[in-house]
Image (cartoon, rainbow, N blue to C red; front, side, top):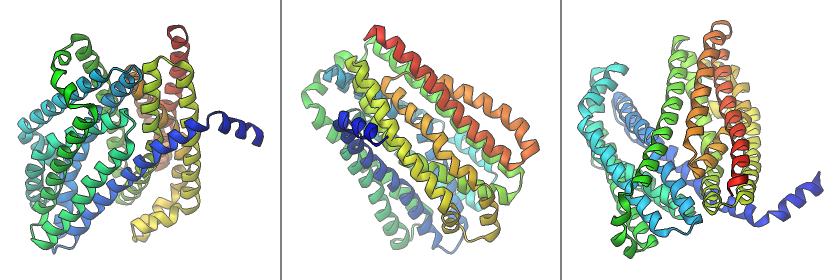
Length: 448
C-alpha cells in the first residue's frame, strides 16, 4: 500500500505541488468571507436595539443570494479563460473578460431597475417587524449601487482563477473583506451610522476592489490586447457559447438554492428548535464547502487548461490528483465533525436546548464530507471544461430525487428524513457527475 502511494506521489509530484499551491490561497480567501459577515453582525450587535442585527441579516441575505445565483459570471469565465490559456489564445482571454464584464453590468442594471418589486417580494416573504423592514430597506437601497462592482469582482476572480493567479485573487479578497471590516468599525462604532454604516462599508469595499481588480487584469493581460479586442467581442459563436453555458449554470445554481430554501422551510415546520439546529448544521456544511472549494477551483483551472490543450491524459491526471487531495480534506472534516461537532455547535450557540437538538443530528454532519466531496470536486472539473449541460442535468436529477425522498422520509423520520434527503441529494449529484465524466473521457479519447 505504501509503495503504491509513494509511486503515485513521485510520478505526479509536480502536479501535486501545483494543485496544493493553487488550493491554499482559495481556502484562506474563503475563510475571510464568514469573518467579514461576523464583523457586520458584531458591530450592529453592540447597538442598543436588537432589530439592527435582523435588518443587516435580512439585507445581506438579498445580496448573498444575488451573488450566488449569478455565480456563473465567475464560473463560466474561469472555464473559458482556462481553456484559452491551454490553446494560447490570449486575445480570446481578453475578449472573454470584456464580454463577462458587459454581462455583469447588464445584470446589475436590470437588478437596479427591478429594485422596487424585488424589495417588496423579499420583505413580504419574510414578513419581518416593521422597524426591521425599514432599516433593511435602507441597507438594501445603499448596497444596491454596489451590485455592478460586486458582479464585476466575480468576473475578475473568474479571470484570475483561469490564469491560475490564485494568490492575486487571495489578495483581492483580503482587500475586499479587510476594508469592509475596518470601515464597519469606522462608520458604525466611530461615526454612529448604524445599519447604513454597514451598507456603506460594503459598498465602498466592493468599489475599491473592483477598480483594483480591473487594473490588475488590464496590466496582466496587456493594454494592447484591450485596444484590439473589440473585433472579437461580437463573434456570434462565442456569444452563443457564453449564453448557453451561463444559462445552464444559472439553472443549476437556482436548483441548489431551491433545495436549501426548502430544507429551511421544512425545518421550520418542525419547530423553532429544529430550525435553529438545522441552520447551524447547514452553516457547517457551507464551511466544509470553503475547504473543499480550494481543490475544486484548482481543478477548474487545471482541467480547463488540459481540456483547452486537448491533452486527455493530463485531464485525467488532474481529476485523480485533485480528487485525492479533496478526499484527504474530507476525511479531516469527518474527524473534526465526528469528534468535535458538539464542541463546535457549542461555540456557535450557548442555548442548551438548541445544542442538544443539534447533537442528535451530528452523525449526518460527520458523514456529509465523504458524500459532498464528489459533487464539489466534479463541479470544478466540469466548470473548467465548460460542460454546463451535465452540471445542469445532474442538479435537476438530484433535486427531483431529493423532493421524492423527503416526501416520504420526513413523514416517517421527521428531521432525520430531511438529513437523509440532503445526503441522497449530494450523493446523486456526485454519482451522476462521475458517471457522465467516464463518458466524457471515452468521448474525448477519439476527439483528442
